[in-house]
Image (cartoon, rainbow over all chains, first blue to last red; front, side, top):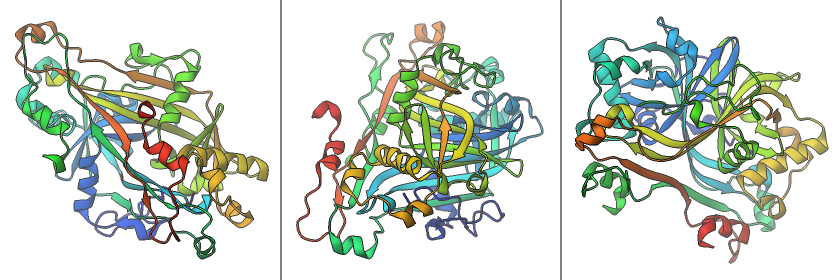
Amino acid sequence: MTETFPSPSQSPRLSPTERSTVQRGKNRAVADRAVLHSILDAGLVCHLSTVVDGAPLVLPTGYGRDGDTLYLHGSTGARSLRTAAAGVEVCVAVTLVDGIVYARSVFHHSMNYRSAVIHGTAVPVTEPVAKIRALRALTDHMAPGSWEHARVPDAKELAATSVLALDLTEAAAKIRTGGPADDEEDIDAGAAWAGVLPLRQVWGAPEPCELLTGDFAVPAHVTARAVPARDR
Amino acid sequence: MTETFPSPSQSPRLSPTERSTVQRGKNRAVADRAVLHSILDAGLVCHLSTVVDGAPLVLPTGYGRDGDTLYLHGSTGARSLRTAAAGVEVCVAVTLVDGIVYARSVFHHSMNYRSAVIHGTAVPVTEPVAKIRALRALTDHMAPGSWEHARVPDAKELAATSVLALDLTEAAAKIRTGGPADDEEDIDAGAAWAGVLPLRQVWGAPEPCELLTGDFAVPAHVTARAVPARDR
């Protein structure tokens, strides 16, 4: 139960501020911006936290990345997000659980994971060209290939969608891999099994909408996703 | 991109307060406490949000449930959590993504998901018997069977672990299932594929620790987890 999910860690190239500086698990900090990007790209939803009437609020939220900008699907967030034209302070976390670490002691049980935590001010994206670019990033993240395949937003839909942009400057990434860190005495005692039970996300077979006309084949951008990269 | 993750919804039996009352996606609210429990039991990590120095902070955190109490692995949280003996206001979210909903328009793309959001005051669990009970709930959640199999915490480990308790009274659950909700004109046009690409988490084969002595067989509580319930 130690350091299952430590706080955001020191990461010179990622997190220059005090609040994104290590408190626990310094050895798991990752200072590479490419790693931050890879964690964000591998996730599907983020957890977006704001302060509303002095109290914390966290909600699952769709997102997309374009370089060092994270776009958030604002219409799903708190009311405060939708009205704060000047920007609102947020904290965003993306977490991928890669396995359970079984140790010889309950105390040393842990999880393997990749996590990213970003602090910053989220700003509404309102300029039409920028908004289209943001919506494309959101779509490319959630459903790669859909922007080219499906009908793109019209003016009314564009107006009905709220998008926030968050800079990735103040961010921390952390990764835990490998087996348990048991105490010497427990290893010597050999009284309990220890190891890792890996966990991964897999896509199932596409389920076509029953209202599809004729024999509409599942398009390549959907089938390609359903097949894990290593099996292609 | 509509209502991918609506805000916590009205749910008479779950959320009596204004802040956990519907803002969007009323039709996806779930008013059954058993559903809330099932979502929490199916998740592995929660996202724990607090206010630190006036700013939001969200971190992935291990948890466990015992009846209508959620236990949080406090040592992993913000410094504020560890010092607030009187309790600290938190918001906790657990989210399970079940699939991507491909619509005929980008605008109606969505996700299938189950989510729970809980508001409340997290209180440190310090009384030894209560703390053992809480650690057992945390262990049973992360690694069912480990409490019986591995060495349980000694006094020193118990002191080194911080646990918070959060009442599940003020909570909201929401579920989206099924295909896209496309516009009539897009359905008639038949210009794009639509459907759901399901997503699920699967356990891999157990990876024994290389320091295990002899031929330590993988115990049943680990192998049983690796096999999906429907395949047993």
